[in-house]
Length: 406
Image (cartoon, rainbow, N blue to C red; front, side):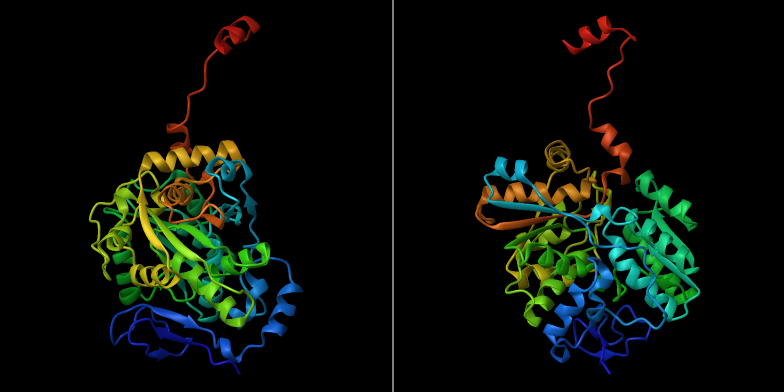
């Protein structure tokens, strides 16, 4: 039988997979799920993967096991890897792609982790699940909890969530609490609710969520035929960066990929504690007390996964930088106009970061590059309307149309 376990990322202490823990009781660091890679047969895995359609559970042998008849799933994963010909040509790049995870069922990459997290919650027989969210996590958790028949509670920062995301959580039946404070305040309350009320936390501090998210790295290898040279990805709470690195590293260890890419994390300037730590060459972040950015999905001042993120980016040989809101909006428009993909502001941060990295020479023009677009633009339609040209009013006549068209 496979010897899966939870392991502290700090002191390396191990715990049983079915013990409900989010942090090590000895040193306080977060936990990670460990698959015994050395016990697995790569050829058998490859044959099993190839027998299934692209998606999260295509790779079930590398995920936490489930005890029910099937996982809680709505066909998440299997998202497009879009070849960006026009944007690539504009930047003089040989090979540029966008992994568009906004095409997941609820419109963001969160579904990858939530299918695994809710499946584990069902198997642990928890009565209620909870999360803090700037939007995408709440939408995804509410959808999957509804399917599983588990009570769902979400806590959102007051006035700091896009309506497209909030409407999803409400429609899927979650109980929504609006917390007076920012995301970090809401997450602190969530963790307290776990200790005091026994609620099961499904933020990225949960060690099972990143396991679903790492499947995006597996998919990229299978879609390209090899890992890219560089992966550019937004940084919010940081769990996705670490998840991608884990996925690429596991495929490399198994011999299913020859290499793992350099990972470049991108933050918005008003919420950039990880990028600031990289500028200082530091091993710890300085939390931002009042994070501000148009990219609400990464408006996080004290990311819970900062240590995992720093280790993943440094381990890959990459870097973490910040971009302005103006650069994010310009990138969002460029992706929509040139490639036909409508991505939310946080997702556009990856392309904004790529432009800077190409200009600085950190990312070479002959590389194979993948930018991760984490969420769909319809998540924040109000934001898109605010930064776009307004409709032009005309009379219902050709004369009026001709005059306004110039």
